[in-house]
Length: 114
Image (tube, rainbow, N blue to C red):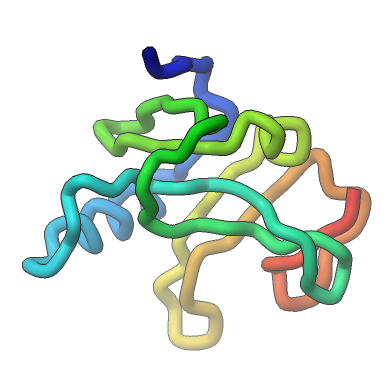
């Protein structure tokens, strides 16, 4: 049985639109879910993980705007309340992370410390 949690993170409308665009690509593997998480490394100690992946043991599931998401339950302490946005401009293009749990963030925007 899958564990279902309240939604620990928020995706902005821009992020939802970009993720759904990626999911509509012809070669997208629809057995995968959007993984939101962290891993050790980066200039500030931890790096965000955002990508499509298979569900693993220890993952909790939730849905945001019709997007099936997974997160390792141990990552929730670092990410609860985080907002993921998509910037499509010429100077800054890509996903951005606003994390209220981060004590500091690297200039690259994908690395943080708690």
